[in-house]
Length: 179
Image (cartoon, rainbow, N blue to C red; front, side, top):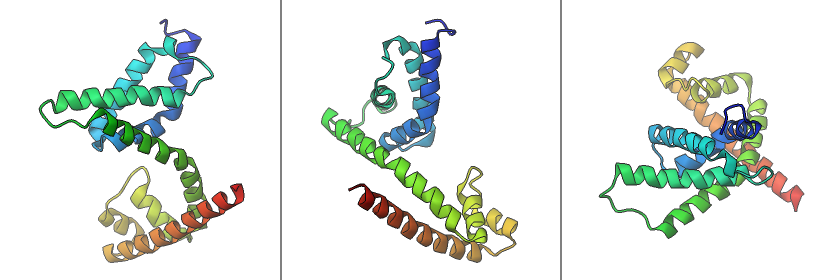
């Protein structure tokens, strides 16, 4: 397929749009981050090579998940050929479970974003330093906040409790209003 082909560009755009969800799906089947990233790259190459097979208007995420499931199986067979492999049925159940969890992810992420906005400013700051892109260790968070490591641990524990309660409440409210 020509790299200027609009269908190929659309498939690649969809891949990038769904790449975080697909990575989460792969991590559900293969909980090694480096291996998951390798498989994600293989899926991209396969999706690009098979772009002509994708029918616009159909479920792109389901199509790429099917490819990802096969790539995870291939990876495991290459990496652990002598190891006891899960039966096909077990892989199907794992994949279905990952798919079902993924269906609730958008609601959970939206609820978490709203709940983060409700945290006190210093609590939000400590959570962002620890868990956002930089993923700073406790010592570095403490240094940046001019706190002790113990204070950071307490603040994170409290913030997690508040966020957990808030997310659960929002999800329950969403579920109740949709019924």
